[in-house]
Image (tube, rainbow, N blue to C red; front, side, top):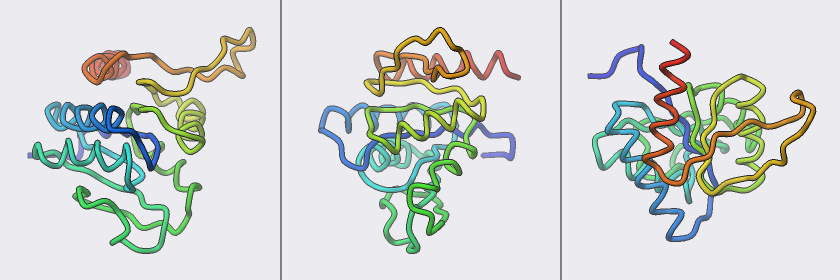
Length: 165
């Protein structure tokens, strides 16, 4: 039974991914479902689809915030979808809908979501994703926790959630 107090975790990453990254995304989705968390993503293919598949096939709830105007364009593992017609601009909505994010690999859309998460003070854990140089200027540094695998990413998010209750 899911309630209004559920945790929403975003999985962000590229629309196209390698088999290895797909396995990581699937396992991340499975672990999100195991926690009873709702998986939020951009609703398309690649990392998003594999994460949704991992969650959906393990009785999890998935929510896709779609870039286009047609619900049927979303991946087949979405429990629910929101059609935005906003293309990549919807990335801000994806991030704002989450309590925390896991970035897996990804391209410029993923980078924008990491930046939005930093802007909104939403924790981000990265697995094999963007690297950022340390900056002396804290106002210009993107903050992302690093995890070697999905299990470690989930544990890091649990820690963030406990500290921010």
